[in-house]
Amino acid sequence: MESFFLVVHVFLAVGVIALVLMQHGKGADAGAAFGSGASATVFGSRGATSFMAKLTTTFAILFFASSLLLAYIAASRTQAGSILDVAAESPVSAPMVEKPSIKNDLPPLIPAEGSESGVGEQDLPKMK
Image (cartoon, rainbow, N blue to C red):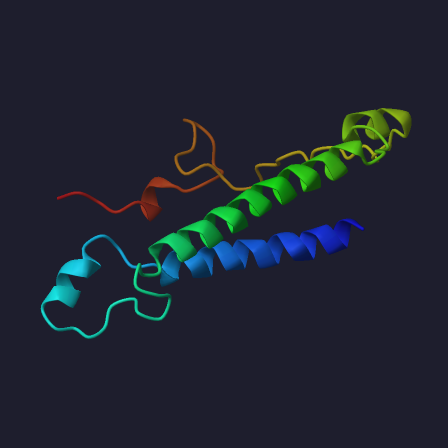
């Protein structure tokens, strides 16, 4: 039943969009006065404004009503609870992983006085 209302909701949304895009703006009458053709004679002498406006209003009211109906259906659906409640009921124990120790196997760049390890003075560039 929810999918039916969802399909109707989508059709109403597309209908509202199409009706709004089909209506002409307030400045369109000025172009008709300068010879752009017969303006809005399809819907009678009064023009399409009253017909299109009423149809758009009807579609908009139905769209909002279907929005409220879908919200009510979604809220009344039985739910298992919050995800935090589900997580609290079934704790997952992750294996403990020890951090690897960082070993400094590289010789120091400048050895301490008296030590023979690392880079010696003979390896350093000489300043003139």
